[in-house]
Image (tube, rainbow, N blue to C red; front, side, top):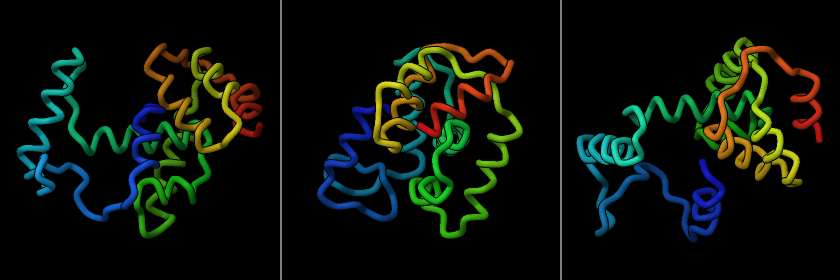
Length: 144
């Protein structure tokens, strides 16, 4: 999630429950319409096509990897039980890797913990991480 999207969602006067994707008239998009929309977005961006659930899992895993509090992640993902959220935390722990410098930079410039995670998530696509872990540096940024 980019900082722009995060800010836009925070400015919403009403938090809706249920379907997020809607037509211009406010009616819910069908599953087919939603799939076509993400396919179109990926194609126009020159990205491999991924479906919504894959993007959701990627977001949850990366947020856990960057150290978001599990209870905050539970809220962001809308899980009713913390054990659902902890699956993301366990996957992130078992796949720890070095963070690219651009992610470190994004983390250093933000004081608010939630905004720091969002900035890191937004920066992660700007570089590819190296497999070797830089655990001390990563832990220091999350703890800051």
